[in-house]
Image 1 (tube, one colour):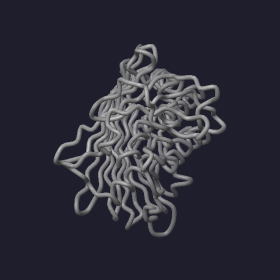
Image 2 (cartoon, rainbow, N blue to C red):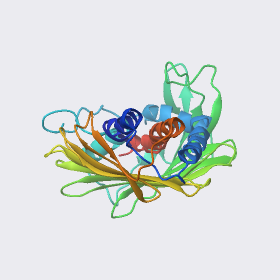
Image 3 (tube, rainbow, N blue to C red):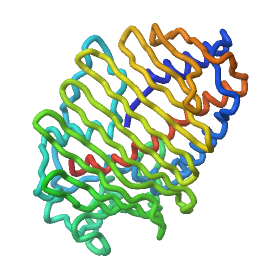
Length: 350
C-alpha cells in the first residue's frame, strides 16, 4: 500500500552503487540473496499471472451501485517542504478519504438494503456494471461482481466479454468497525479470502486487511495482515506476510508529516537467509543499518540521495551477489504492488 521508492534509493541504489565502487559493503558468506529473490518471484508471479485477481485490481474502480454518486475531491495534506517520503496507493487513499468523510458506521449497514443479494454484471452498451435480473448465488448479506478479462489499454473488460470469476463482498461489520468480507473465485478455485476493516476515531482513520491470496492453481498461498493508520500529523504502515513456499516479510513505516521524517523496519527471509534494514530519514539525512542473518553488514548515512556506505566484517559483495540483492529489493516492491490490490474493493463501501 505504499510507494517506497525514496527508501529504495537509500538502501538499494545507494548500497549497491557504494558496494560496487568502494567494495566496502559486506555480507556474511553464508547468505544467499538469490534464494530470497527466488521465493519472492514465485509468489509475485502466482498473483501477477492470476486473471481473476488482476481483474479485481483493475475493475474495482468500476464497482458502483446505480445510486452511487459524487466523486471524491478531498486530498491528504502534503508534508511541509515537499513531497511525502512514502505515498499511499490510489485504492488505499480513496478508501481512507471516503472513510474519513463518511465517518465510521459501526452498527450501520455498509450496503444499501436494495442491493443485498444482487449480482452485478458488465453492460457493454453502457460501459458499466449493472444489476443482473436473472443471475443468482450472490450472498444475502452482500453483493457479487462478475470479473472479466481486462483490456490493458482501456482498463475495462475486453469485448466480447470473457468471464474469469467473481468476487463476493459481504457485510461483516461490528459495533467497533466496518468490516468488508472479500471472497474471490476463479472458476471453482478460491484465490482470495480476506476481510478489510475500517474504523474512525476522533483523531485518526484506520484501514486494515487480514486473510490470504492464492495462486489460480492452488499451489501458492500468501497469508497477510496489513494495517494503515493515518491522521493529520502522519501515518503508519504495518505489514506481515507469510508465503506457503517459506518466504516471510515484515514492514513497518512511520511517517511524521509535521517534521517531514520517516522510519523504516523491514525484514525478509527465505530458506534460512534473512535480510533486514532499519533506519530513519529526513529530507536531508538518512541513518540506517543493513543486516544479513542478523549480522550488521553495512550502514548508510548522510544525503538520502547519495548516502555514505560503510561496510563491516571485511567481506565484500561479489558482482553476482549485487545482482541478486538488486532482485531482492526490486522484487519486494513488485510483491507489495500486487498485495496492495486487496484494498481495491474497499472504495465501494468506505
